[in-house]
Image 1 (cartoon, rainbow, N blue to C red):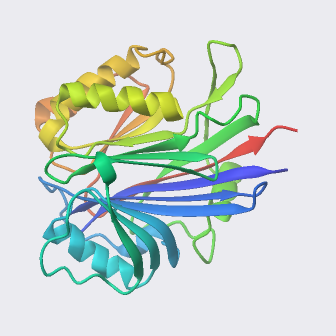
Image 2: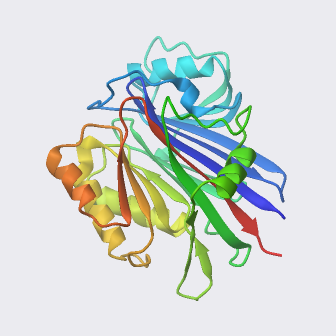
Image 3: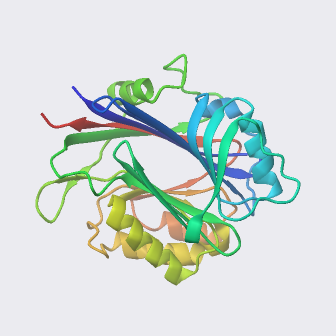
Length: 308
């Protein structure tokens, strides 16, 4: 059987929100890995996180800086000691005195505020704003023909210091995804589209923190057009009301989205105020609010099975 495996990690380290992804396609014999880092404005961490939670590989194709501040750059330098980075994507000029690690092959500033690429059948969209913050969206490309895949499952679980994932001796999206699909509780990631054909929802949308409500809606619609159903949403404390408005419209089935019944994970690594947190938890059984703290994270690993 030919598969497209994926592994996505969402967590915090130091004072940064961290998102790591790894893709492996056994039909096309392709692999791709990426990392997103953004400063957390109102930090909830009480215990320094353990980098070993995240099982990074030694080679990462793309790193996106959601913010280019001292905390994020320090975290990047620490991580890059153990990995080779092909491309570093930034939203604005790096600060004076920035000593780029030798492990980074090239640094690219977002041209016209937008970066788009498609690789291993996965679509990536990064958008920068005036203050240099960057929002990121990715998921199974809308350009993949319907009927390419016949099934999709994923497992979502907590990462904690006392319960690390140790199914594999080395970080490997193939082994993680297959192991969790076989031995963990999992979600079925498919629903029927308007054409009554199976549609698979695998998308992630991470807000940069500088978007107003209009920009949030525009970003969501553009993301939906490219990757379809959004499963994971990264929230920021600064613009949570604008983001909540977008989430509510998404959950109501706007923009040709399916109705309630699609499980989504709303992830915050910042100290959301009580009313905002309560609103997240009241949003319905299908909306899973996750507040990262104490060096914790969550991991999503899964697979798309090719038809035939």
